[in-house]
Image 1 (cartoon, helix red, strand yellow):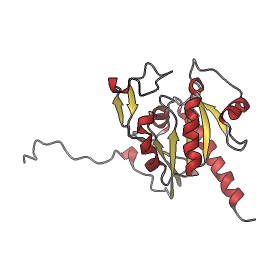
Image 2 (image 1 turned 90 degrees about the vertical axis):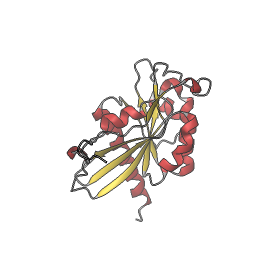
Image 3 (image 1 turned 30 degrees about the vertical axis):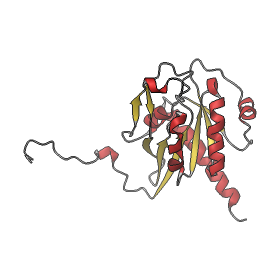
Image 4 (image 1 turned 180 degrees about the vertical axis):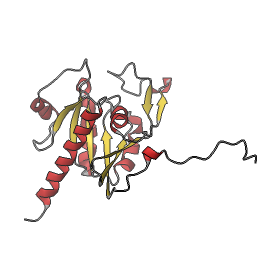
Length: 206
């Protein structure tokens, strides 16, 4: 083999290196139906170049995938998205975005393994898609918060009306967000961490 003309072997970019001060890593999954903004959220908030597994949508999905509200979307996640964000010098979150099309939901079980919590991204134009998503998290016992991605043409509902429609207990946080904005996506993650902290405190012996 001619090594002289081959491409040089390169490692991770400097900005992708894990901070040397990191002491704890937490796995978080970003879940939701097709086109709710999971890939966008991971990409907007990640401090490293996100790993995506998007593929071009084909004719095979016609009659199988529910693309309502996402008619202009031309690509879909087929395995996962991955990103990372440092919350403090010591705490790092590893973000795993799940595929949204139902025919890929069999991959969710593996992504849920070891997850401390989850963010359920919601599109108010397709609330019914979230029922199965939330049901899967409840079955697995994964704590979660709900983040309503504010699409420009999506209807807005009061939080308590959404809570009733989703049949969620009062302690589960519901927040609005714009996943295109890093600060907004980070706020959602902070809401989840505060919720997980409150659950841990409630379980701690007096």
